[in-house]
Image 1 (cartoon, helix red, strand yellow):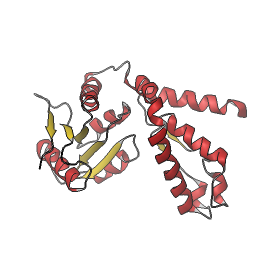
Image 2 (cartoon, rainbow, N blue to C red; image 1 turned 90 degrees about the horizontal axis):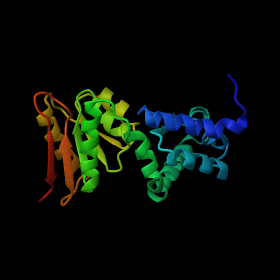
Image 3 (cartoon, one colour; image 1 turned 30 degrees about the horizontal axis):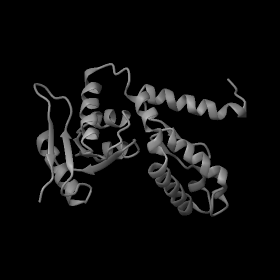
Image 4 (cartoon, helix red, strand yellow; image 1 turned 90 degrees about the vertical axis):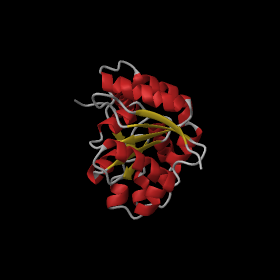
Length: 223
């Protein structure tokens, strides 16, 4: 199936919206900074392309030729980070209600409903969400609902943490633990140690649905 060039923007937006709706990870990799294969500074059109992708609510942006064969790979990554950080700080927040509405409706099983409740609790109290996830499933569900608060995920599995690192809102932390309760407390301790969580912050801690009872805890970090 072929599409005209004039259709690309609408098709990209449609695909991203469907990924949000079905809670599937979505990465945009569309020659975002192609001119930087040769030049040290992106064009204005490229900056706009990157900004639009960020405002759409994607999980990640991917450079290809810019960093594999380009003359300015470090500059390309630096510019991508600079644009992303600016858009996230200044304009993404205005589009967040639209993104969250698509991601959080029609939840079809109890695990997603549980995660939504925990996440919105953290958002309502302007807290930070701490998750211990041995297999990454709870963390993936949190990310798929497009959290607006910081989410710190501990795991004993480095391979899982690498996969989680490209998902929306996830800050991975390596933890040596083989049980959920210990892992959760170690994740909180390391978050404090690394300066992600500070004294006075509210945190919501969870490790997902585990029979016969579930763990959700609220703490205010004190000295």
